[in-house]
Length: 73
Length: 279
Ligand SMILES: [Zn+2]
Image (cartoon, rainbow over the protein chains, first blue to last red):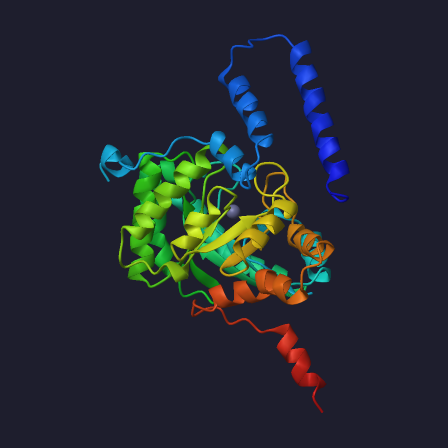
């Protein structure tokens, strides 16, 4: 905790400032990316050991097992 | 500590970088063929590029006491052009006898398209025909998970592929486990923007252990840091890890993997030093 506290504090502050910046900007808010960001934030707050992996998967395209036959390969 | 950078694009670096890397303990490097920052117009451009990788860079590296090895292919981005790719693949055997060529790479997917997958399979055939090792590029960001799974499908569906002779690069938290589980080697790319940081790479080593794990800097045309492997060494030391664990990831593992290529005629500077120290 001693090593991570200031790192985490700084990163939360960066995120807070980023959200403030988005609020001040114009443009569409009805964006799928906003939902992804919200979902990402909830992952951080959960008590699971693999948060990094789950955040990665959240921002990933879906894999479909049948891709080879779809491509005819 | 001596280390080997198993994935670094020195054609995009200035000579000063060779000097810095040498001073930081880099004793060998392997440079996969990749995208040049723009799409090349003809197969002849690739012939010149392969000459650069097999003739020019080894000499540039040797001036700083670094041994340079390389891998040949047409990269995933330009593989979208199937016709050009086939011309390049047909030319590669001319270069496989060059003394620093370790295998076929970095082949892979970029946007996970049908054309990219078609050329990936044709590169696999080339590697099998000439008994070459394979170095793989997995896509970035949102395409990484899907693309890595597709690549593993193509490799594991073919019984002629020996996973212990294949290195899958740019693994991250969501792809490392499946790569290792299937018997492949996995490379973590330490990159400031789109890939893995030294701290997250150290986390992955702690979670999965050091076996078949490598770390590289990519050091390419994009914003990248050629000295990223020493950054990982520093992070691991800061966390109190054993020197032997660190050395396994940054030095012994690359030697073990590359030694499966007949052209890996690496001279270990640490062994030479011990010998000359004996009276
Ligand atoms: Zn690369």
